[in-house]
Length: 174
Length: 100
Image (cartoon, rainbow over all chains, first blue to last red; front, side):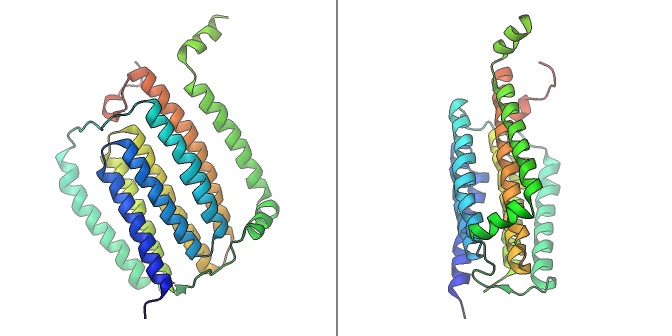
């Protein structure tokens, strides 16, 4: 019997894989960015199927929202055009493509036959924001605070790196 | 009911697409987006394992991965802007010298 859960899993999974393959096929970065947004939205659907409501919401807001807007902004800022093709090495094609095929078949075979895992029911675990917040601010309080320092350092690094070289030179002269 | 292994195979496919994009693509922004795709594939396996073992810590790890991805995107895109200012190109094959 085919359950609605399996159908939804397959639909979202197909969208995610199609977006990922489209990212490889497209030559213009803006098309790649849009297909990556499709992948992230489909993954949010998968998270909802697994009962991870909070993660699904954060996936849409932070990943598909904030991070991808940053990417699209930089693509437009730098006026990135169509990718220039350069010749890859022949060894990479001769060895890489069969190697990738063998590796992926092996991994899928091991996962499907040897893992011995049971099915994951819909909404298997409570991923409501209250429970996640409780965990985050009690058991994982220290890592949470450390990430705030990480974000602060990242902001300062981004400002320093992206500032104009002339501004840095002026500072040195003073 | 979907087996855990199906989620892991989907996660593996997404990760493999990210690796392939990282190796094939020549545009530095597309390479960066491939890294984000790899992080997304790993996040899916985190959530699937969390559901399978009934351990909510897996979802907390996804949260931390997202924070690191946001920090990485901010710094990486700043580096891309700096590289573009110095070299006037986004092709990684033309960025092959440490000094100008």
